[in-house]
Image (tube, rainbow, N blue to C red; front, side):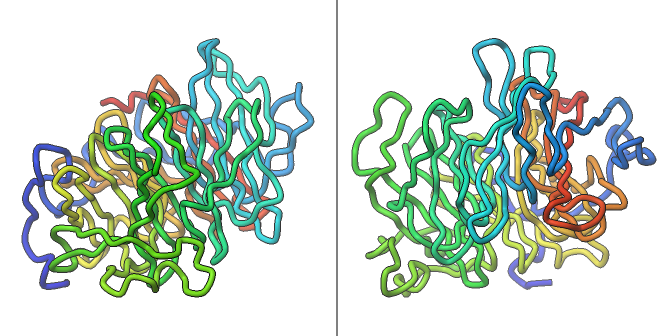
Length: 382
């Protein structure tokens, strides 16, 4: 156990940041997992699953679009007809990546499927914006961030001002009008982007702005100081190496925004972090070093549930989606069985908060073309 993590952590401000560093494991009876259903998914009582898409097959009979391989980060967007769209990144290399979409009607049936972006590479995670678009991140050293229209009416737009590096994820702070980004590298940085131009309504202009890297004062937790990255393009020196004082984070992964807090994970040390954007302090709310037999390993994508729990998807581990509750409890809320060599990816709730979408990225046969996308229905609000 790292000495700095011994003992419980205090509440930061009045927000949900984990009242203590997670110290207990095991689900209550409410969330105890039952044996696998017909889809191989273990769920709590009162929850059901169905498969909505498989890589290489057509999810909607009205569309010729075949669901992409290696589905990764995702999000849901409401549509005017009472339905919604689930967007999903395609984490294939060498120009084989992009973004696909499933459109659902108000009854929850898949009525269309289509591409939002193609000929990009290793589109890993990403973030929904308050103005209704999807930011898709490329995860390789020359990776960029692309903005996509979930309905597919407008062509995707690239935003090099957000930096050229191995992007993992991005979220928007709608109050301060800033973005936060993670970098998937062993010595990656935690970044902040502030647009140059003022917002137009709730829409931010991402064409120009200041990219900064975080320095944690009193590592691993404490106040954060931000430093401008001189050249976000990394033309000569990678952005992560341009600010000497900036703090390395060991493999930045998924992110989620909730009530003024940016949650993110780092995979090489299996930690979950919470950065309070008002107090500008960062804390660790989960570290697997605290456990002889940790419930959560292989931390990756993150989403916040309707009941306020932080849900962390496992890349490997036990193929679970694991909850960290406000009380600090840690327990799985679902598990995909028999999918050896895969990962849970793209967890996202529909507008009602009663349907959760996610993918097993490589499916039961562990192939980039073997992804399966699920829907789970149930009382997530508790």
